[in-house]
Amino acid sequence: MEEFLASSTYIDWQHPAVLAQALQLAGRSDDQTEIARRCFHFVRDQIRHSWDYRQNPVTCKASDVLVHGTGYCYAKSHLLAALLRANGIPAGLCYQRLTIANEPPFCLHGLNAVFLPQHGWYRLDARGNKPGVQAEFCPPQEQLAFAIATAGEQDYDGIWAEPHAAVLSALLEQPTVEAVLENLPDADLSTATTPARLKFS
Image (cartoon, rainbow, N blue to C red; front, side, top):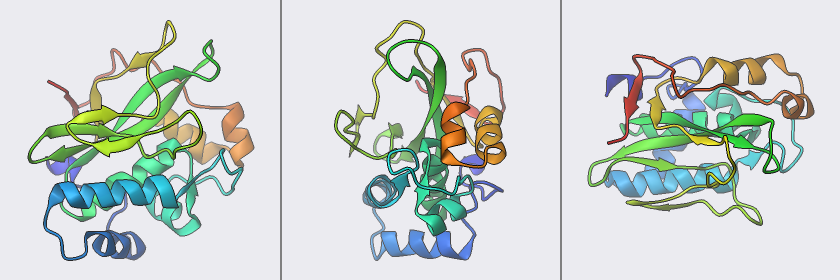
C-alpha cells in the first residue's frame, strides 16, 4: 500500500494547504469510511469542474486544484487522492475511456479508488454533479458519474498510484481550459503495465 499513501509531485498531500484541508475534513473522526465520504463530498461539491464553469487556470497538482478551487476530472482526482492519503487512507487513480457525445473520438475520464477497511478497493468519482450526472459515495455500491454505454468505451480495472502520462501531457501543455477541451487525453490502457497498478478482484 505504500505507493498509494505516498506524497508526490502531483499528489502532493504534504503541501501545507492540502494537509490542513485534509485534517479539517477529518475533524475528530477516526472512521476511515466517514473521512473518505467527507473528502469525496468536498472535492465533488466545493471544487469546480473546469469546463462546467469555464474556469481557468488549468490545474494539475493537488495543491493547485485546492488553491484555485477548480480542475478537470483528472485534476480533481489528484486532489481527492491527496486528501485521502493525508489522512492515512490508501487511494489511487482510475480511468475510463469514454466518448463525448456517444460517438468517437474517445478520451480518458479520471476518477479514484479508495481502500476502505470494510469494503476493500472502492471506486468513486468526484468530477462534480450536474443534470444527467449523479455520482455518489455509497459503498459497497458504486455510483460513478458515467456508465459505459457506447461501443468502444472501456472501464479500466487498474488502480494507478500516479497520473497517466497522457493526462499529465494534456494538463501541463495546454494553456487554457478551452485548449484542454480541444486536446483531451486519450490512451488505450487495456494492455498497460505498471508496477503501481492493482486489479479489482
